[in-house]
Image (cartoon, rainbow, N blue to C red):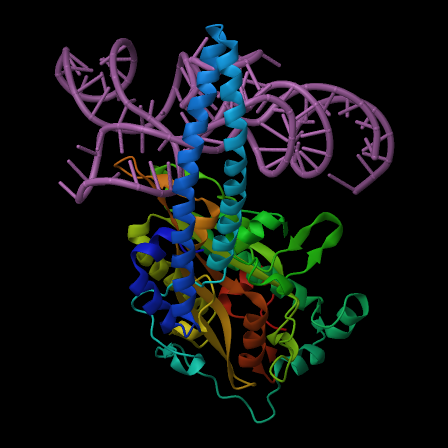
Length: 423
RNA sequence: GGAGAGGUGGGUGAGUGGCUGAAACCAAUAGUUUGCUAAACUGUCGUAGGGGUUAAACCUUACCGGGGGUUCGAAUCCCCCCCUCUCCGCCA
């Protein structure tokens, strides 16, 4: 959620930023926030004066009683009773205004960083030079959904039987490959200084609001009605929420956490032609990296995280490219996002495997995640996160790109973790 | 699932109707002393708002888990809810 103060004081900049992400009615939306805020403040000032008077008079009643002036005290008490009615009414009005104001703010996405390009959709993203060589496959090369059948390593039908579409069962070497990737990613993260966390994979409502999945993406999360819990769509949610309502000591910054979790996504309405096999699932595994930083160096850390992701892809010997998302393609909460895509040679498609974002204070504002700076002033921190990495599409690319007549060759870095070189 | 205890500032923790936005201690911070480090001493120090100021000063409101209520006045009394802990039961 944007800070009200920022909307109020840097209105033009906010509108300009929102237009960059093609947010419709940016102008009107911001205008209504400002107007409502103004109305609220007028009422608030008035109410506070009334309350101040009331407080004084109450004190006076006590003094009069102590002095034994019962009659005066009673008269004053009756006066107070009348004034209280107005205060009560205005308190109600103020509450309504505050609620409306928050609801408006919830609907406004983050303001993109100045370097984020304007744009509507994927075409307007800035694609950087691809790194790594795209393999030339034999004419009879198979897409991964055929390979997994041929080698019997992932079974979609079994998943359908016990859960439903989008819940694959990994078998034998398929399961071991999953475990190897998770271990590899965690071990690399560890070397890069990230503290591993194993959080719950369900979260409460407050956590959903904290990182901004709620109310924006209500229908995209699985919900356990009985207990009011959401299955996490990403480890970002529990890990970032570890720091909800926290006042961080300055010398602990930046905080670097990571976690492996399964991720659950309903993907309501997004099932289509391009989602065969592992391309889109309801449940998948991911290692997520999270950083919490002082405002002044969050963009440095974004680059650092991006480099970490790139190094993983290079070690896995997968051809990839980085892109800077344009305003229109960025997530609701983000101020700047890099996506990483891997080339999956049999599908001849680029697949998104990581998204690294700086949220600036957008999440911290809701989370009340702050620190005291050197001047002793309390300040919101910046939150960042990135996938490092999401497994299924990595698996798809490894299977497709490394297929040979002899079988599928496992990337060298993974062999210590898989215990085998070929599938 | 049953019974009990409890939720107070960055932390520990005192506080049962007005003198309490809250003792004390710790942490933090500024300074004094000491050759350095350490220690000691002194000062400052909750959060979010509103008004006000060039900026301060200053004035003011709300907040002691959340929501209602009683009262002229509530951290303190009453009701509901949430959460945590302990014991019993069940159990990986």
